[in-house]
Amino acid sequence: MYILAFESSCDETSASVVSADDSGIRVLSNIIASQISVHALYGGVVPEIASRAHVEAISNITYEALEKAELTLKDIDLIAVTNSPGLIGALLVGVNFAKALAFANNIPLVAVDHIKGHIAANYIEHPELKPPFVAFVASGGHTSIIKVNDYTDTETIGRTRDDAIGEAFDKVGRIMGLPYPGGKEMDRLASVGNKDFAKFPSGAIHDDTLDFSFSGLKTHIVNYLHTAAQRGEDIPKEDIAAAFTKTVCDSVAAKLSMALKQTGINKLVIAGGVSANSHLRNALNNMCKEMGAELYMPSLALCGDNGAMIAAQAYYDHKSGDFAGTDLNAYATKITKRVRI
Ligand code: KG4
Ligand code: ZN
Image (cartoon, rainbow, N blue to C red):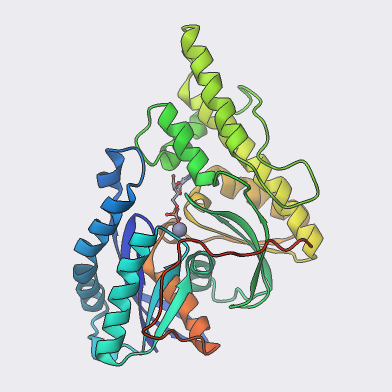
């Protein structure tokens, strides 16, 4: 079947066409209109500007996605759209566009959870990957450990109690004067810095939960840099980036190894913008090797927000009969109870 999927939950407008069957998901097009240059001016995503930019981009990228896939709307069997979580105004653009397209062309519609979509990016590139597994989703807005029981049945077993990891990367980057979003540049700087330059407070909560807290780490570094500036000390950005990244990697590895032990599952999947971090990928690779666990990660192109991952999850949602009607709405947050194992 051919699926046309939309993603507009934050600062990327994306439309993708995939062909899908039980043997796998093949990406025919995955057009991403990034708004980063617009928001960089403000050092973060401005929700109103994001919604407007989605409106401006969505029709053109739909044409582009169909054209690249060499298909027309008549060939499309299913339309999919992210409806939660995310910026409400941004989500509504995608949801209303997808609803109108589905209704006008009599095509079934599926609403996709953004977090499940990130995880599903892995099904595209690893057709051999099958639940159950433990997933770690880390992006600008989310940091969660999820037990994926089946393609559509997931339980959040750990999460950040405050800042998301991507948010911490971006805020530390901002204090150091890096352009928004700082995550990618922090990754590059960390490769040439001294990771043992300083010891920062862990982001892993010191208890038996699978929860994180990154606001303390972020504030610690902000204070550290301010104090250094007052003393006239010039701290190399590379060293801050390296020591911060090491702290993040150690914190994540600690909780993910606990998650694998507590669930008795030895398969780990990572996803989301922060899963592009080269140091995190290395650290988790080493951790999984030591534990004898399998590790799956998306290629860099599918780590960030994109429509193809939404199409991949939609394939499994539609198989479970989970269709949306014209009353479909968007939700900024989804109340998911954290399940203690
Ligand atoms: O998944 P995503 O594209 O959007 C959200 O759903 O938030 O993730 C964006 C986040 C940003 O915070 C960005 O700085 C971070 O992912 N990011 C990285 C790297 N590449 C992107 N963080 C650390 N290292 C990277 N290489
Ligand atoms: Zn995302």
